[in-house]
Image (cartoon, rainbow, N blue to C red; front, side):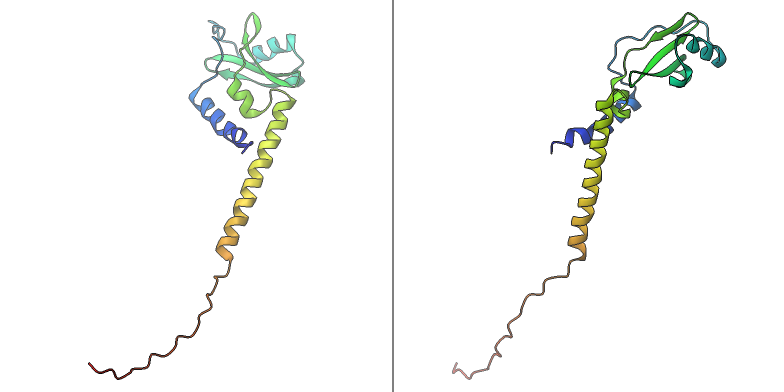
Length: 151
């Protein structure tokens, strides 16, 4: 039972991702001028090592970069002025488990709990399904002898 909230965390955060819920404040405004991907890569490379970059792409009408910093995957808006940190998207961080080492440990615990539920569920089903039916011991009935009773 103590793992139930952790087990429910994955589908609930996935639903939040699908619905676009971020639980964050307002995001920085989008740039009026669109930036090409090669320009975005050069802007990101000015401030960060490209080996720490997870992705750079157009999301939601703006150029975004996801960069690994201090064991966390952070999102940045890429504009012609440079990078600006976006507010944390907590459902995405919790769903992906990349917000710290604790998130990774929580993902391992959730995976172990789900695996244990799967295995024990299959074992219980197999015991019920494959068990031989109990045959009740039957005692032979005494034959009914027709007696002649006066009516």
